[in-house]
Length: 287
Image (cartoon, rainbow, N blue to C red; front, side):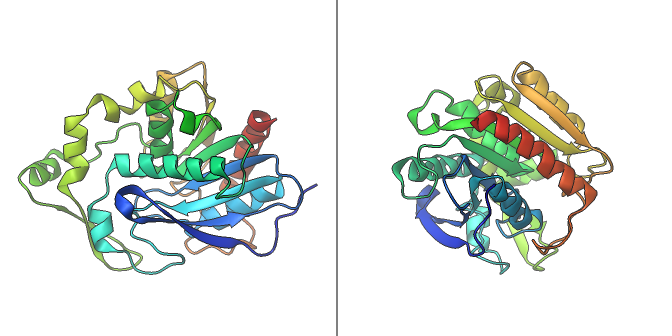
């Protein structure tokens, strides 16, 4: 039996384009079984909603858990305002590069979990970023430690903007995205779309998923109003021999979990099922 330490530690690493990746590490007592990296979605962050609770539960199973703020999330530690410039400069490749840098830090011993199998867990855009990273770099040394990926509520398409919005970006403009949490008006910048146009295959998620040689776990709320549950099926069909799909009954995009959410509180039935499902997969992958 493992227990997660009461205290956690915060850290920073240089990330994509020199912006900081910020993280919080949960350490189990005793020798860890595996290492987990939790990646947030668009306008999410490591302290959002379910993530502290999920990290604690997985740590109690004996795993080192790092929940991270990607470099272009625009977020510091905690629940503050977004750095609007960082958010506007974000691209899919920024997230991929951040994951690579975190894996390097684990492998080198700069972050805890060296020598253990690593599982990447991502929510929404974070799930697709994890899949994209491993798909692009499946044979690379930096990714050798990865033993599995869990994508929660992840979209199968990386270009989820209307034609009108894409035309705005192509004409040199930017697309507004409001944050209901902070009241800020944030923006998607031209680089987000241009990168996809310059490398369409590198941003074709089903194509990249087909390259993955590790297990892929796909968890999706059956009532998700933001990303259709059929996206999980589409991703699985790209690599059927490696993929497992679990639909969470009555689950929404965040598995019926508020933000903020007290990590000591009782979870929703949906979030509890997510934790059990992911935990069982992870235990089998790091065994």
